[in-house]
Image (cartoon, rainbow, N blue to C red; front, top):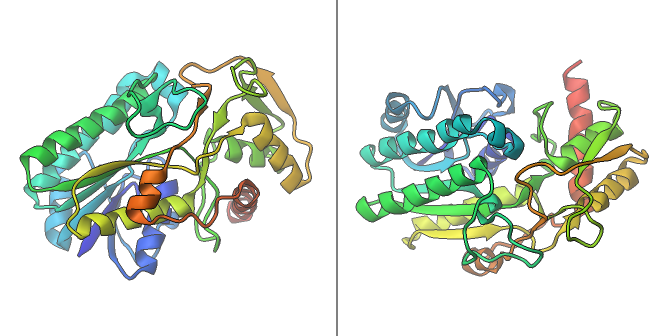
Length: 328
């Protein structure tokens, strides 16, 4: 069996490729390299540069490599950008996924795993959110992802394909062996920005909103190590291969850290008293979003191995140091 990983030159996708290749899987990566990097793709995978919304391109890959399964990461992910440029997100996320699904159905793909987001829940409140919670995305990003979830359900009802959706929370960290990490220089992920500030690549960072209804007034987020996330995808793929029905699951650790807490951990790990300027809220940011992820643990026997914020920050910091030497 051959697995197609879309967006496999990106942050999460490249870690998925590592996990699959380490297990001896045959992997094909499709990526247009607009935000990804060809050097981030593990050499054991076959790489095809192209747009996964191009049905002819994808159909050819399915035929040429005998692809049975697709793990779909390709897309745009910046919430504030989606608010000011919604059509980009409906094109890159929703329309692209629609075309990819058509090529998958026509090519006889058996299993499809989709990278979704906790943003589908919207303003979920301070308590951990379950998969059964109301779906009320507050941004075009969240809505574009939810639309794809809905398409998957409709397609699976009409065709012999099963799917798995992982709604995950705030992904951070880097491969423990130093093989991949978050490499986009202008990425907006909090931990990425904070460690860049600690290394002097930014003269300061910003804390968006200090008047939320949270213990310290800043947003609460559930940070998940990217390697644990890749493992959850691999277990979900095995679950579908075993003949189980399509499913949707949260993927997080079930505890939240505030922005101020994260900044403090970065200061502690780096030994640098980084400057964090407090500014107003960003549109589309919920006060808190924390996972209730017992379904993934119970159904997949998913057991996170890197669920420690200090470890996550240390891995991100070490990767950023590597990038500085690599880019010289």
